[in-house]
Image (cartoon, rainbow, N blue to C red):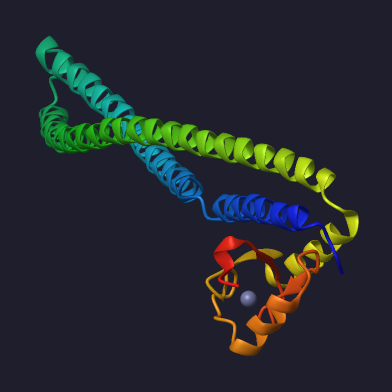
Length: 246
Ligand SMILES: [Zn+2]
């Protein structure tokens, strides 16, 4: 194939743009900001789970407290009633009196047990409520971190998008200037090995870095300037300039 040496030279600009686009695509797949967002979202989920567990524990303990308080009130009411009966002097039977005193003693013991239980449950409630507060503070911190991670990811993606758009525009413009058959060749080679054209510098292919042997250099020296020549090793279009050492 033949192509104007100036057009061949423009292939190098196209290769630079394509390399930038390839780097941008790779960066899009491996953005550290994406992993940060994923991590923050996982942390958010587990912090929310912990918070829900602590909230449930606090409301369970509140229910236990209400139950114990109601029971204590009942026992106290019964005690008051019994004491009232005792103080009223209306009971004359010794057996009845003895039963009443026995019941009062039982109620007082029950009261003590219930009050001890209540104290223990209230202490547990206090500790759990402190866990809940810590959980809320931790969640707020993680939410903040997640917001920042999302912002950084969006910024990185916006920057990539702008690089890609700019690259695509440049690519489009360059392709518009180049002969269609040269572009088609370049695209075929690029689809196969990632790079379509490279500068031959000091006898060395700019794509695979292989140094051409004496025979290959001899062929290149004989080739007309508008002949499109390829690297024997990697197949890219070799663009010859004053740097090529020919
Ligand atoms: Zn090569």
